[in-house]
Image 1 (spheres, helix red, strand yellow):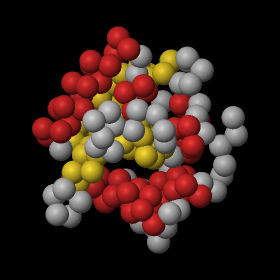
Image 2: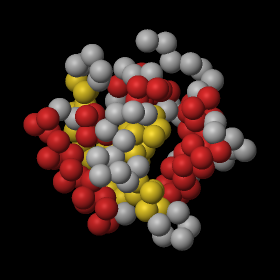
Image 3: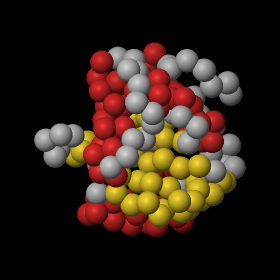
Length: 153
């Protein structure tokens, strides 16, 4: 499955771009350091980041609204597929309780820097992530819009 080098059009709408920019803004606000190098095009900077970056919304069963190029490669989805799946499906069923406990911890603390776990790609291939940072997507007014994570494999 080829992943485009350019930012997919689905991420370029004004609404999508604002949500994606919040990924970087929240990270910097909560962790005190930039997620990606400063850029006039934060969507492109996140898309091209060497570490995987994913984000989901606040739905009852949160759905991914962003996965950068590296994340899509790891999870083996194209953008259209990835942005339709509930984020819980990124972990196998037996590991979903562990994943939910992590997300509850992030909700309470704002972010964590020490997450490790196994994720599953579309093909069923498993991969381990270590030292992941997971944070709440919180705007300047303190309103929560979801959660995001960045990790390397």
